[in-house]
Amino acid sequence: MQNTLIIIGIIISILITLYVLARLKMKSVPAVADSDKILTLTDKNFQHQTKNKLVLVDFWASWCAPCRMMAPVLNELADELSGNSHVGKVNIEQYQSLAQKFKVRNIPTMILFKNGKEVTRIVGVKSKDFLLEQIRKVN
Image (cartoon, rainbow, N blue to C red; front, side, top):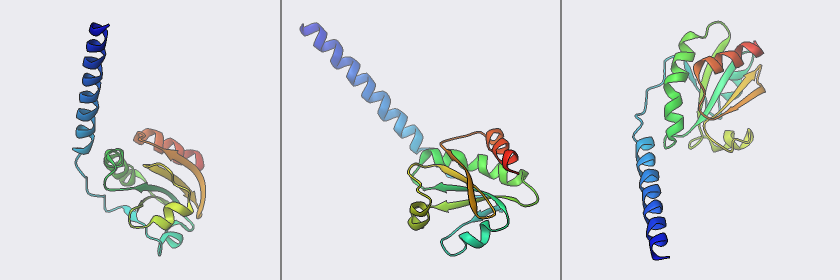
């Protein structure tokens, strides 16, 4: 019985150590500057910037490691899009009202707007190819 408890204790210690190391690794993902082609959306310009366009809007926060992982993907996507298709970002720490309005519960959440109306919602880390496919389906 005592040996079993020791083994369980060792396993729990290993799992806790792995969890802490994974969290530290996620937090060390560097922040990437946004591309010049990414629209910075606020509560004041949101309606105007999404009107008569196709805009993939990323709801993100600076403390969110998966959001930081998506930044280079969104930069590449913004650079590839042309015409009336755009990528925009909303910092949910600064614009909580927009996150509440669109019922953003998890981040990163990307919502595809066509002419100011939500058409598709994507949650989590996704590839550039996946996002391009979603945009092509709507366009």
